[in-house]
Amino acid sequence: MLNGAFIFLTDLIKNVTIDCEVDFFKLSSYGDAKISSGKVTMLKELNCDVTGRDIIIVEDIVDSGLSIKFIEELMQEHKPASMKVASLLVKPDSLRYNLKIHYIGFNIPSKFVIGYGLDYAQKYRNLKTIYALSE
Image (cartoon, rainbow, N blue to C red):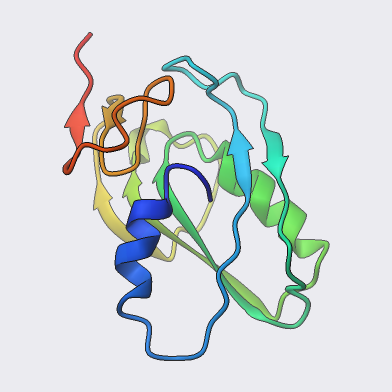
């Protein structure tokens, strides 16, 4: 999902050895805040047909799980053959939904993080590593 996951996806896709297609959702639930608004807004929809296809949703971070829940429900309407979720970071203590994250890079504490694609008010995505944002 854009914009946060693009750097993680770039590193992942370099290691994929089968034919695949890449497309993007763009969602917003944070805006310029450090806390989710509790509402997901779709800013960009998919441009491909996923019916009958095996799908991996690549996410930068799963915090409350609201965005993943939103995407899973939306994707089921398109009837993929299968759907899995890969996330670079997961905050297990912040999850509010019963979700299956199939591939997890790292579990992290419930802190606001930036860098490696993760932002605060659209800043800091370009940092080469991940940092907890100071209070």
